[in-house]
Length: 312
Image (cartoon, rainbow, N blue to C red):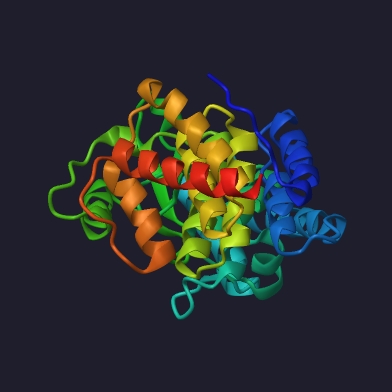
């Protein structure tokens, strides 16, 4: 069941631009990623960055030769251009720098995190005629390409955009999952399925929201929650998180509206209690008492009702 968006004024225009990008035909990611960059760069001119991607794609096409040749050979030539000539690299030293998530900054600085580098990689490769897809792998975004299609197999080449386009085996992917999720994580080949454009955009936004909350940049985190709800109005968890962020920003009326709506919709959508605790702990610095998720939100609502009534 969709929820009422109730976007903040500054988010309305960005949400509209993001919606246009998401509804455009094809698989293009750059317009959506550049719309997200308006969170920090509201007057950003996107045309030069789209033109830059076009130039990179044209140049890459001269490096890789026939894209219908041996796929790994094509990718090695592309990697040499992308990482060695253009100088893209994973930002290991300042991984949590928000600039790593904004496409304009990634293109300017030639560094980013796995998903932002993947967006650039995908956009340049597509312009060069190379078929690739994103992989929404837990903890570390990856890329994949079909392999041995002529022989009728379902083998794929997995590419790590953060580590210079390294090719990963299934064993490498299992180890990567263990590093990011823990020893108890169960590997399944479904984790390597292609990601949709919506899944990629949502992951960029969720990464940014978590980062802003850790930085206590609550206005930006709330802005991101607005965008997440515009991308997926049925994302009830984002309604809850936006309400909690409004609470921390002392927008008590907005917080009450969102949290009451969340409680009304909650029976249709079960969320782990630790998600609420994580957001509140990151925002306040104090771990909340042991309560069910419903109890925690209901306590907030009761407090907010008293506050809002006192303003009337």
